[in-house]
Image 1 (cartoon, rainbow, N blue to C red):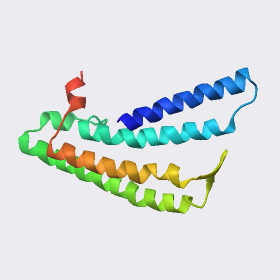
Image 2 (image 1 turned 180 degrees about the vertical axis):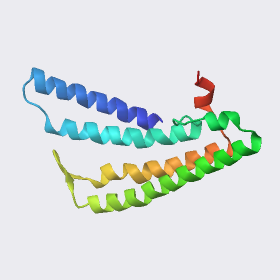
Image 3 (image 1 turned 120 degrees about the vertical axis):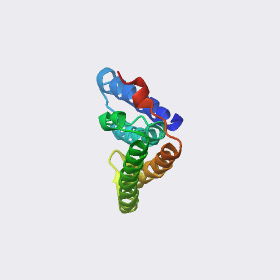
Image 4 (image 1 turned 90 degrees about the vertical axis):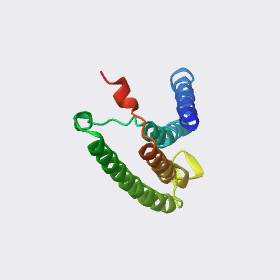
Length: 148
């Protein structure tokens, strides 16, 4: 989560730099827009695993609230399995995109491979898988505790 927060802070700094160079200095920096997008993508894929681990992903929990112990455990398992399958697909295709993107360079950052942008998908998927398994083994219901 600290890395996700760092990426948000970097994106904010790059945005401030972009505003200053564009509107005050009237000489916009091309590289900031690319790095803002790059930072936000990494922020999302590094933040999602924490949400999975804490059980704080958005859910429709009516069925969970009205069900008993065994049904709840079944629902937990079904949700974990579906999330694991989705994470596995993101891992598989994300790694494929990262490899394919290694021959491309980022617009505005010549010499920097798109591999580093696409790498956010498989890295986030690996950490998400760990978070999903962790939440399945030791469930936390952050969204249910704060629900009104």
